[in-house]
Amino acid sequence: MTTRLSLFDSPLFLGFDQFEQTIDRMRKSGSDGYPPYNIEQISDTSLQITLAVAGFTEETLDVEIEQNQLVISGKKQADDDERVFLHRGIASRQFQRSFVLADNIEVRGAHLDNGLLHIDLERIIPESNAKKIAIKSKKGDKKLKTIDVESETEE
Image: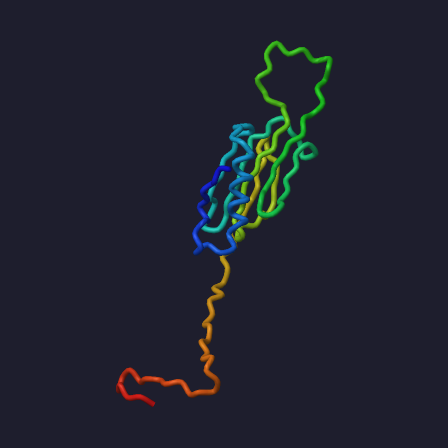
């Protein structure tokens, strides 16, 4: 039996099991370079992923999100049997490209323009949800001792 070390083995990381699963999914997706893509920061809160998908149409492309994973896939188009290629340098194979999105990233839309598929993303900045937790005594209704710091007298 082999033991696998994890980034999240520390007891200080509570509830981060999903991150380890996400990293495993990323490893399995492979490092295929097709289709090539760019990730561009448009503004402080906007990002855009652009994939070079020459030869694909809106009908043969699919963009979906499942469990914080953006999956873009292209289905191979039927080849015309009558065509004879002397050189075939334009790839027309199927593909699937995955990107893991943080919880605060939302997909705003996608559009195809001149063989480039653009996917618009926005980073949602959440409001602070910090709150004070009251500390209570477990020793019945006994009055707690408080100290006034300025006068150093006990109440």
